[in-house]
Length: 236
Ligand code: NAP
Image (cartoon, rainbow, N blue to C red; front, side, top):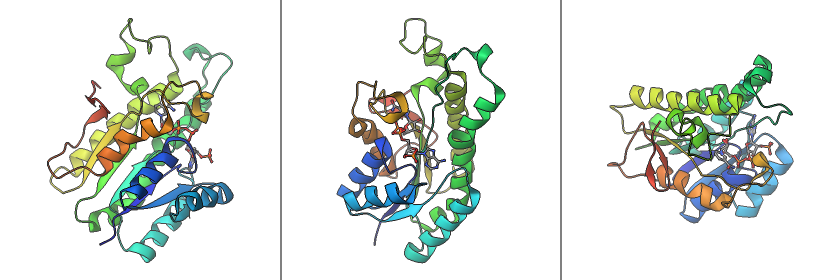
């Protein structure tokens, strides 16, 4: 039977690599992207299907769920990868507006909930579905509070708090689905060179994708409600 995955924000960066690597493992990796032209071009490059999906637009998410139901009847893997970071001239929390937080949360937090709730009926139809949320080390309260860490300096309130919220959202879904075969985990790709950070990261998007792929294809004895990078579990 076909294993089907939906990856949000898969037209470029880490999401594209997740779709490509899942495809290499025989998964039908649906490239979810908000821009039709760029989404279709990315999907064609890896020979995978495309679906238009803007995570901040509930109608587009519902339409994507309907299309997946018609085409595949179920969904085995959901990777909530789409994410944004807003670059402000003055990034200090005291100079960060609530509107900036709302803008980031629309995609990184509310978008994940919109997509997950829309896809859950399809995920429940799969034998053992996996949900992977693309978080960040910057969402870890313990890691950003370590004065010796490179993360200490990166005090980006909107982005960092959106990923902390995403971590709690991951746990919340994992707990609701605890007694089912569905596993829900948060992963961090490490600091990867993508458009998100002006290509300043020291890792490749492919390296960043590997932990998401691993958690998307997890065995029945794997964790749920965990936060991991490619070396293993992280502190929240
Ligand atoms: P990227 O290259 O900027 O890719 C982000 C993707 O998200 C793009 O495909 C973008 O689409 C999509 N997206 C943004 N808003 C969307 C929306 N409303 N609906 C649908 N898609 C949307 O960044 P990336 O580094 O690969 O980031 C992927 C994920 O990894 C993000 O969640 C990010 O927070 C996380 N992450 C990245 C790093 C890193 O070092 N790069 C580290 C930790 C975590 P468009 O092309 O249309 O904008």
